[in-house]
Image 1 (tube, rainbow, N blue to C red):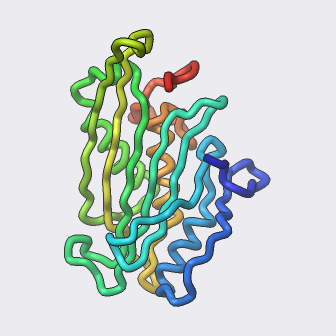
Image 2 (image 1 turned 45 degrees about the vertical axis):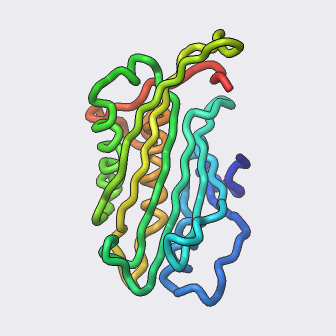
Length: 218
């Protein structure tokens, strides 16, 4: 995955994907996409636009991201912005954010019976920490383990966490949600799942995954 293009003087990433949203797209959707493109991100998080789903909403924009620290991929994910100008009964709004986040786990963390609840709290906590209101949140947290045999027997067992979620962002002036702030909160979640230290002042109430060191098995 290529790094996000453009760098501000403070080292924060700034997306510049060079892709155009059709002029016929509704103004609120175009404004939300521009907010995504202009978001200021941590330098360890690399973001690229990717092909959005075609059947979930009349308008969609998607990003994929990876957390890379010291040359090691620690976590990855995808965030999709959906827009239906007519509104959607299940969303209770005209916008919806849909995400997938994945990361490998240390064995001791994978064995924690409270891990799914903790991971879900990371998402809701990331939104709350940035003062973002959202409606109709839903999702799943899946923990999976792999054991290798035969020609792959030398590989150590591996565990992975996967968070799938969606929520309706509150719409502001002109029916436009603060998409850039939601992206920043999502990146906070990515960093937390990857085991990075908090981007802001440390909060002793926040639990993070242990940082992984050394190359991951392919």
